[in-house]
Length: 254
Image (cartoon, rainbow, N blue to C red; front, side, top):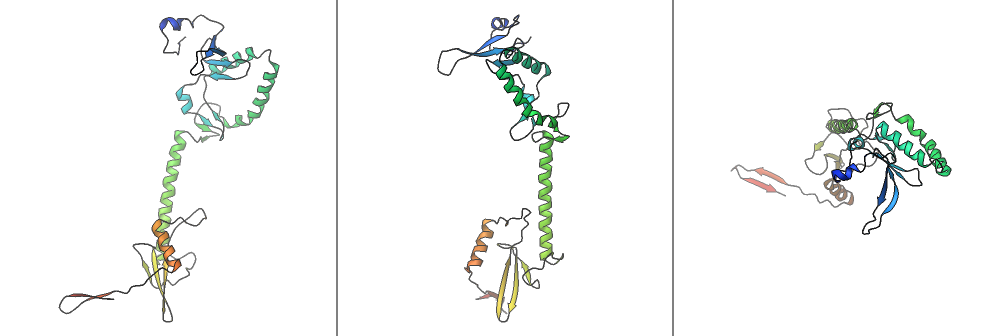
């Protein structure tokens, strides 16, 4: 039997061999010298049982924790070697043989957990009901691919929306402004539509977004600044005119 306590000397490790009753477990509370007996560890050194309870600490390795199976938001299933789980049940049953109250308690609790049994496959793997569990490498790979495809769809949809605005593709719903004079903007809003109503020039500032959640789209700080200025009327129009005269000199008129 391999002794897992690496800090012990060879002589001290030898003390654990040859016992058929297990060994006592004592705790030393922090900053004290007291030794408190709380349970026993079995002869195989794989299970620690706590006195007067149906609780046990079962040996697991790091790789077992890595491949845990997520059952719900509160519980996971951890791979435990068969001989370890058998020895744990045997040790607890021997301790509780005269403790009918505690035996009744854990049996009732076990029945409540039977609902999880349908989620666990017959052999250890990273799937639940044939599907990858949330923490498996396969699921993480699928999640990354899913996010990549979402970004690709959103980018493609954004291109389609812009093509609708420019008239390359038909609009799903007619816009509330004229499409006869639409200019794509390089800063602020995406498009600017010009419309005359009598002698009054109307400017339609158009922001194009795709939002699949159904909520109002999140705007960038620059887009929010444009929206606030336009809706509040904090817009001052400036007309600039430049030309080059017969002598090749550029002139500006305002």
